[in-house]
Amino acid sequence: MSSSSQEHKSKLLVFTIEECPACGQKTKRAFQVGDFVTRDGGRCPKCGNTTKITMIYAELPPKA
Image (tube, rainbow, N blue to C red; front, side, top):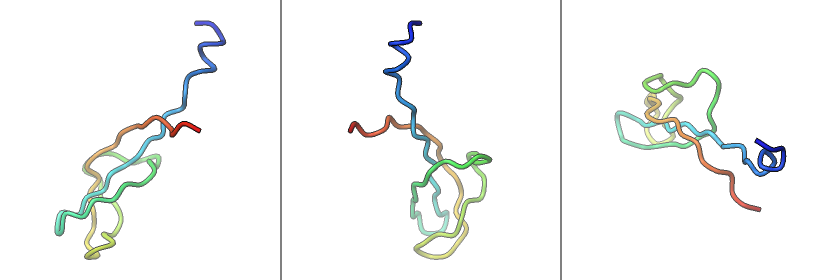
């Protein structure tokens, strides 16, 4: 691969989705090292119960 094609590659932004099993509230946040699907997340902002990580995915950064 030439260096010019490497310069055009974008870094992906990785996100974690936490979902509350009690009320269904979903929260998107930046991925943190140690995150994995089914791990307990933080507190639900809606009802205060413990959330579960249900998805981890990557997006292309927004174009400037």
